[in-house]
Amino acid sequence: MLKATEVETDKMAALATAANEARGLAMDSIAAAHSGHMGLPLGAAEIGASLYGSQMTYNAKDPQWMNRDRFILSAGHGSMFLYSWLNLAGFDLPMEEVKNFRQHHSMTPGHPEFPNSEHNTPGIECTTGPLGQGVANAVGFAVSEKMAAAKYNTEEHTIFDHHIYALAGDGCFQEGVSAEAAAFAAHEKLDNLIIFYDANEVTLDKMAEYTQSEDVLKRYEAYGWEVYDIDGHDLAVIEETIAAAKASNNGKPKFIKCNTIIGKGMEETEGTNAAHGEAGVPYVDNAKKNIGLPEGEKWFVSEGTRDYFGEVQAKNEATYNEWQATYKAWSEANPDMAKELEDAIADNVMSADDMIAAIPEL
Image (tube, rainbow, N blue to C red; front, side, top):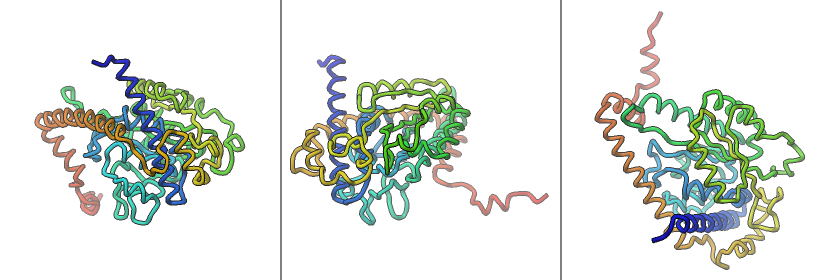
């Protein structure tokens, strides 16, 4: 029987392997498209591994489960980060669609898009791209969860208790929309919200030092957030920090500054603004070799990684099934609230025209 320390070591090794394979998926897809942003998927791979491989609660078979954790990629230009992890985590995003990155009618457009008539990609919570907007979206989701919990949770049954995660970069925190939303989040005590700051000191055209010198961490602390400052490539630290942030119900949203190297793993461009776009395409084969991926094999995912995420799916499905039992008991105990909630989810509500007609004339 494995000791706890051995199990944890195996888990960390599996997450590290998955992080490098996610890097490989991003490199191959961007190289195939000759377009895209390589820096974030490579630089934030360990964050993705921890979230989708350990810390987030979701059911890939039911991506609309109402009590799932939500992840929003505010830095939407790094969309291959999200597509890689959705595929690895078992969402219905086939590898063929990962290979079709940025192609017309594919499920993997250049920026994540909420399911619509053109794209129906499971696991995408909202359309992102305009910098900073995803931070505000995440604040909105956090408000929604708090309101739902206050309205529908009872002393006997908790049906809403999920967390909202967002990943954002330097450009996102330069925008006013994120500042306004952050101040609101602290004022409203949204401690279910966890923001990751991909602090790689790079913007599109130049190193960030040429255009900014503020201490973003202190700014968020001044807003009233609980702040953390970590190595964004140290899986053990990332795991520990996310777990602490989830457990801290102190009325403060959480801001985790993850000090990262943009384009990590591609020595020709890593740590520079050249890593931001597709400038690294000529170096993909060498970079994949350097991080231990098989030479000559594109879109490689090991059997070990698939097996590991199969275990993650099984664990998440067990949590999901427990919640379903709780929800059934809650529904039976609170039939009127259950009907109201289910009608709202099914959009079985009064139309706008009927609402307007119902307004009394004074």
